[in-house]
Amino acid sequence: MWILQGAVSFGAQAVIAAYFGASAGFDAYLVGTTLPTTIYMVISSGLSAATTMYFNQVKAREGEAEAFQCISGLLVMALAVGIFLGTLLFVQAGRLVTGIAPGLSQTVSGEAVGCLKLTSMALPFLMIYSLLTGFLNAQYMFFSTTLAGTLLVGLVPLPVLLGAPVSPDALAWGFNAGALGACALLLMVGLRSGGLGRPRMRWSDWKHASSIGLAPVGAAGSAHILWLFERYFASSFDPGTISALNYGQRIVNFVAGGLTYATSTILLPYLSAWIEAGERERAAGFNRKTIIGTTICAAAGLILLVGGGEWFVRLAYGRGKFDEAAIALTTTAVWLYLGVFVSYLYGVVINQNALAMQETLVIAVGATTALLSYLVLAPLLMNTFGYRGLPVAASTAFLISVLVSTRFMWRRYQAFYWNSAPHG
Image (cartoon, rainbow, N blue to C red; front, side, top):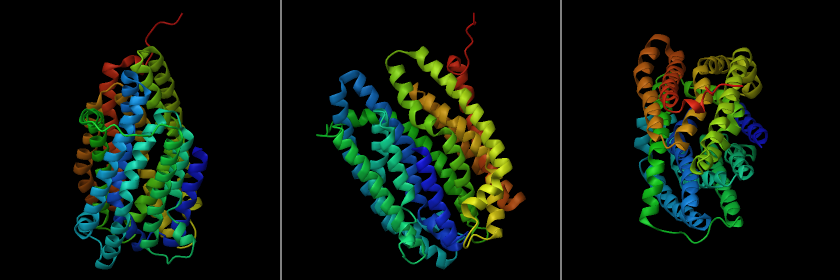
C-alpha cells in the first residue's frame, strides 16, 4: 500500500512540477495552503497518535463498546473545531498571508489569499480524517488509512489534468477534493466496521483525551511552525525559492517516508497495547529490532540521496516548465536537508516511544528545541550562505532536537534501545 501511495504522490508532484515549475504561481499556492497544511500536519501528527493512545486506554479500562462511543464523541468535537478554524482562516486570509510571506509581490500575495480562502474549507474534513486515522490504526486497519492517504495527496493536480486553467486556484480545489475524499472513505470504513455510532458526550472524556493529546499536538505545532518560518524567510529571496525548497523537501520526505512507513504506522499501536497490558519485555524487544532496522534504513537512504539526489530531482520534476535552474536549486535543497532526513527516521521511533510510555514532555521539549534552534540559526546562516542557509539551519535544528530527546529516553528506558542482559 505504501508503494501505491508513494507512486501516486510521486506522480502528483511530477504533474505539478511540469505545469508550474519553480515559479511565483506555485509559490502563491504553497503560501496559500501553508496554514491549512500546517494545521492539518499538527492535527495529524498529534491528534492521530493521541486518538490511538486514548482508544487503547479506554478499551483496556472500560471495554470496546465504551471506547467506540468515546471516539464518536470526539468526532463531533473535531468537526466543530474544524469549522471554527476554517472560518477564522477565511475571514483573516489577507492578514495571514501578509504575515506568513511579507516579501511576496502584490500579485502573488493576492493569489495566495485566494488559495487560503478556498483551502480553509478543507479544515473540517482534515480534522475528521486525522482523528479517524488514529482510531482505525488502533484497530490495525492500516489498509484503509493508507488508501485514504493516497486520495489525500493524489487528487491535488486533478483539476489541472481535467483541463482547468493552470493557476493556484485549480490546485486549491484539488487540495479540497483530496481532503473530502480521504475523510469520506475513512468515515465509511468506520461506520461499516461498527466502530462509530451513538457518541458519548462527557466532559471527563474530552478532558482525558485532551490531556493525552495536548503534548503531541503542541510538539507537532512547534515542529511545523518551523516550516512556516522557513517560508517567511524564503519569501525575501527570488520568486521560485519557496517552490524549490518545497520540491526538495518532497524528495527527502518521499525517501524517508518509504523507509519508515511501517514504523510510523504500526509502532505506536503495538507498543501502547503491549505496555497497557503489562508486556514491557515484549515491547522492548520489538523496539530494539525497530532501532536496528532504522539504522540500516538511515545508512541506505543517505547513500541513495547523496549519490542519486540530482537523478531523483530530474526523474520527478525535470520536464515541462521545470528548467535547469529549478533542478539546480532543488538538488541543492535535497542534499542540505540530509540532517532532516536522519532526524525524521530516528524521530519517528523516539516520539512513538515517548507517547507509548506517556513521556509526553520529551516530545514537547524536543520540538521546542528544534524551533528555537532554527530561529537562532536561520537568520545567521541565511545572511552568510543565502538560500543554502535555510535547509542547513533546518537540518541542524532537527538533529539537535533528536539528540536531546534520545538522551532523555536512553537514560530512563535503556532496555528499549539496548539489550544489556548477558547472552548465553
